[in-house]
Image (cartoon, rainbow, N blue to C red; front, side, top):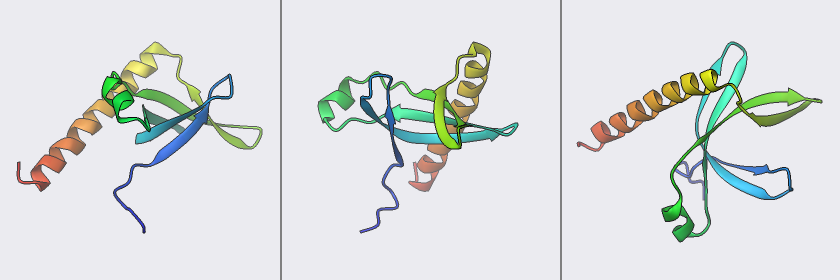
Length: 102
């Protein structure tokens, strides 16, 4: 069964080879660069509740012909991207509230 409302999930490996699952919240493409806002996803409901709800910003790069995600280290860029993402999140949730008659 195709569930169009299921979140887009992405599995990343850390430096120790441990898998971490993230939900793709949004993507920004600018100046030939691609940035993703990722929210950790948990199998255990208790872990989800205890999560601080922080999202991470990664840049998609191509290295040796493969797409990789790297953390954005530039604080000024992170602040600018976070502002853009949060405006988009706010707009998205405002649109959902209007669609639900709230």
